[in-house]
Length: 189
Image (cartoon, rainbow, N blue to C red; front, top):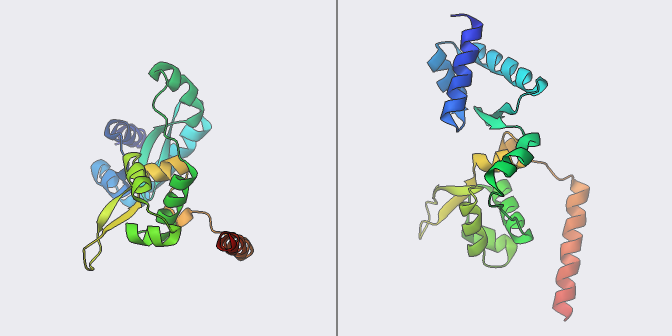
């Protein structure tokens, strides 16, 4: 087979599957090793990004998916007649950030950090497919463990949870002082 055929096969796989496909599975399907397959995918990603196409290939934590380019969304919205939009409130964002940075994490751990019940926030984030159940903790009551999904990675434009932004120590200390100051104000009331 020529390299051009490999590209066509990979394109067909990614288009048809709709979801992300692991590098190893793609390599098996086209009967090449992972290194050669990775090289072809990298070239395809570069080609899609450089061209005036409406779709792109994204890498999501070692897997690949064909997606619509974000600058095409306005046209999709016109066709779909205003798809249902997810609204991420401050509470949802706070809960999501705790899960993203602490995963796998139980609801009790989330509530301990937030200081309030997180049932509604966790339920909404599961409904939005930004988090999912990862299993159960081997502890009394066997609480559910939560973590982020591929949809989370896509929505926030990161290809792995390892690439989440890290706060520098100065910012972290400032946030800590602000939180302590807020706690003192509410304690005085």
